[in-house]
Image (cartoon, rainbow, N blue to C red; front, side, top):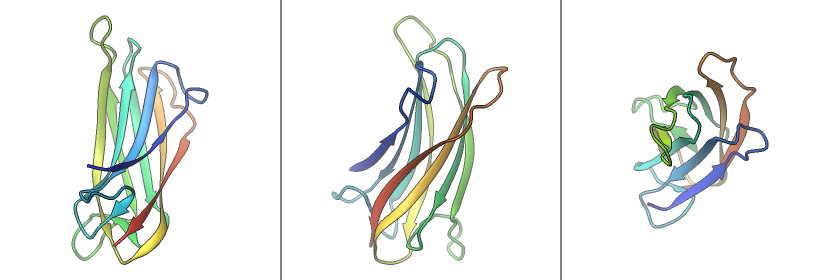
Length: 139
């Protein structure tokens, strides 16, 4: 599945945590959202010992790309959260993620999907959000 990916850099996050966001297309074209089959994915890898809570706030900023809701009301916003476990043993890493289907609302270029991610280590206050963006084409 071809993807477009944005990664969070370690100068704004803990070095043991890695976050990415991507748009995956069922077609053989990168950064492309057809009427159905594409998805927005957030992935996290934790190389530390303590778990992290990751909070997602995704937003389709332009008119032609939306998160799948019901057939009548595709959504502009995606809110979710998940835990990334600490590494379970030496040399391994904890990993987890979430994905949300995307749909095209018409043909377009430079359609933008923004995702704000925050993280909180167990029993600590959450971080300020980091802002990642992925630009796609729609059918």
